[in-house]
Image 1: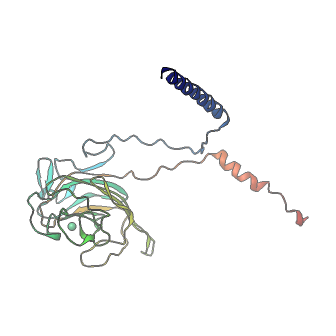
Image 2: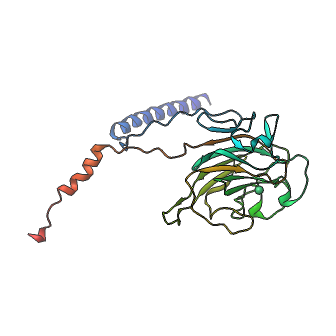
Image 3: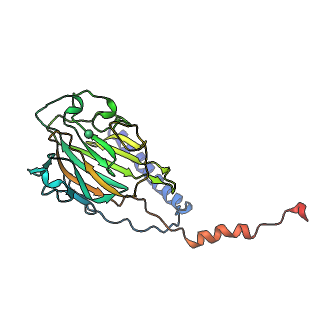
Length: 275
Ligand code: MG
């Protein structure tokens, strides 16, 4: 057995040497691909802890006060959470393309049914509602349950925790763009995760959300305030923040590459049959 083991060990060592040597030879003949694009350095962002805001976020509520919102003084602040009370709240700042994070808890004491249980809502640009609802064992119409884009698209899955438990919602939102004549140029897009679970993947919104009307777009500014709904239920919120730095970096193609691309056109030979 020992002899066999030694033999296997020797074979393994030999194979390793061959592999390494082969790797070195390969490295000598293979040229690394480099695009040559000059990239700006990605800015450093320090992540938050336990849902708190990253270093480059606009903090809307960190557990202390709701002064970032008009109407925020009416909501009850207790134990680091803000409870819906006395009307909806609207941010003083306007936002367009953004990443949004908020945490919510529907009332632990379950009251009501369907849309009457733990209802609130997060309206990006004041008109696109991402539904907040107690959808734990609480049937309602699917395009109105928690995490739906209200009356447009149900969430892919029901990722709700039990009433009273804290839940997270993360939205990556691209604002719509409009033509000069008011018509839609590009729709709004949203990717949504509830408790880290994907609900919508780059969904193209059909327009503003409404209880009474079909979805439709009407031209609006690039940035508008966020609104959080008071639907008469004491839903709690915490850790609300927005990041506006959500665009891909743009690189600069090197001049050399541009010159090389231009050369073949300059030196194009004349066609033979034209002579
Ligand atoms: Mg709602």
